[in-house]
Figure 1: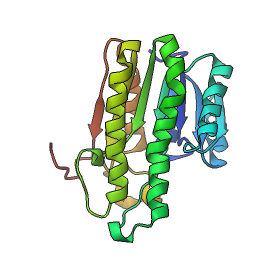
Figure 2 (figure 1 turned 90 degrees about the horizontal axis):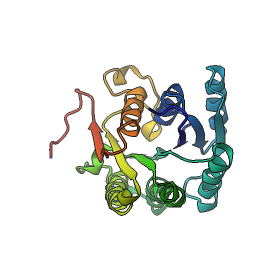
Figure 3 (figure 1 turned 180 degrees about the vertical axis):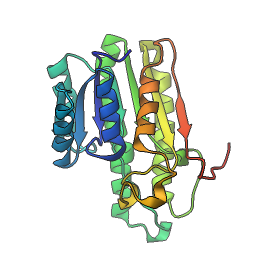
Figure 4 (figure 1 turned 30 degrees about the vertical axis):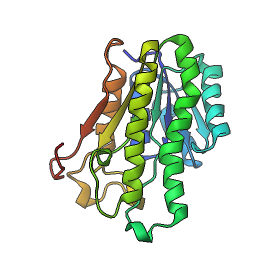
Length: 240
């Protein structure tokens, strides 16, 4: 279903984004993988070593409009199109509201919200012209309920959910689908943690999120999946 399609994945240097890159490459997709550090080129090397050669790596800041327009245009110039955009880049931290600095607040919104806005804004004219495309944003289950000590992070995810829903209504007449993946606890590098710690054995794995992304992107063209919410059984989540 996704073979020969072209995708862009942000935040693909490690963790969830890296797992998504491998899953999409396994599906036969051509990819532009984006990361904020030199680690993105290590991900490209690992993909190449697995035999996935149509991989373009770009070091970029998703909150910078010129950077985003640059990697979108590079993808179009290299592969001729963009079928799928995965907005995965994100930051998160846990602090009391009054202890959160303005710099921390702004950084969270710059990456988690502005990065999503700029990514969509950049690919939409191209997707509208082709009357086809899928945009998937990795959000969080806290886009559906609030948590203590996470006011800034939660606020960004509520913003992403609202923005994605509004854009979905704007572009569906062009055959463009917009959805979110909302995971609970994932064994990743979130909040400066380490991946693979024993206490995370029963958490979701990055590959679980990647499977959800492939499922959403592979849906029949007449079907839009608005959101997928998933969490580990060990996590006690409020039900809406």
